[in-house]
Length: 273
Image (cartoon, one colour):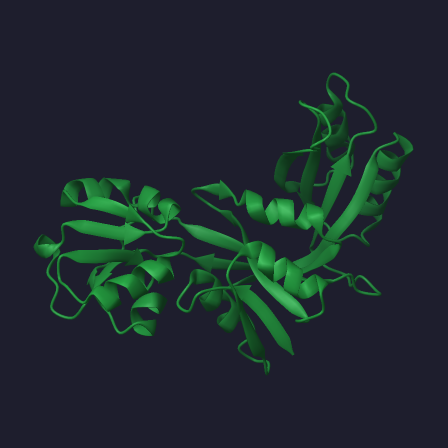
């Protein structure tokens, strides 16, 4: 089985992918962007892909949400990866030697307090892994990267200071994406995309009341513009019931009766790494 994930080597995406598929024989395809992962699945270059969709601190990863809108694909699984950010550098580096910290903007934002205390400047990279690789290639002790233990091992770097993130409860949620299956299995969660029949006052409240009336708990709500008219939106809604659950089937029927377009994006179980 061939699976795509967001590279380069040493990313959190790589860690989530390898740990999730550890019991299976997999040929990996490393992609340069999240949209490239979607394209690889859609074009049949891989059977599945894994992409990050939400971070507990930074929120929704919009490029993933938009990628789901642009492609007719199906979410078959969810993976929760604890995120621990460390200051890493070349062998022998001391904390007080570091004048500049390199990483992806969200990781730098999640370590803002620590970087301020360190008195270091920062430099943006397109991934934590590319920052770690750049630190390795530079080979000096005056720069460090904010990255994972996985990255440190991948590039032969040492952890200078552990857990430098400002918030301890930091997790990233990934989804396993594939081409739409012939059958949707029983599962514990469902993600649907609702496009309102027409814009009107309180339309989101009306939609949410359908789920509330059936005691269906919602775990994620995200709005994205329809790109047709300013102020018009579609809504991602994730529920704690599988798509084959009778209450979920009833909710979808009611929403369609109201004239809303309902697209099932996935039905899946959750794996915590």
